[in-house]
Length: 346
Image (cartoon, rainbow, N blue to C red):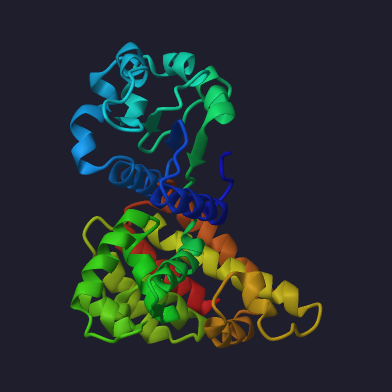
């Protein structure tokens, strides 16, 4: 079954990893999707647990799609294990295999003694074709879709909880801003951070992220949205100028999170129009940690409904400009300062 979103994917992957660590394997795994973290996590877990070290010489085949044909993979998969209960055949970068769809021939009747892993990096099999349909019947499909920006803080909090740690909401936002939607980068930065933490620390603070990941809250998009919410004009303009000075800055990188922020303010207006929500309800509807509700309470006061809709329209205009439309001679950094100035003066 293919998961529909990151929560379902995470739940599915947890179940697979639990089986794999218990020595329970399916005949075929099709691991695919634009977001590579979960497919690669499952693939590595299978490689680490499928065979004992002494069994791998004769029973493990790892190849790459650009270097093999479907016929070669099928021949390997149809071999029987030597002095082991099973053999493992892994095709990495399978999207580069010209004859990928021909693997459907094997997948329709796989051997119980072979574990075949088809790992596609940043790509997916065509769901209308035979390979996908045959694995759906005889094996396991993990489809990992990219997370949206606003989903990242929640994912990060859950990821840290798995490790027996909590992370401050502001630290989670800062880490999300640093890594974008790259889950693999989050994992790498987390491992680096954990190695440098003093023993016994159970909550990750903003200072921990700033020190170990190399990002600064002071000049972040997260801090910019906060200043806009509270209408701290001078500070907001200073942050905008600093963000725009960053190497390879592109305006849509800033417009997207600003749009998400003001869309939440608009949604909060709609919620409040029906009466004051119960504690925690508004945060759930907005998809934010309850810690940030004081900011949104200030934002709805500072951006009444009409002003908020004008800001969202303005953000759409600047998104267009940032993508090359009608920007004139203005540079991306100048456009960002101009945008922030207009938001503050509405």
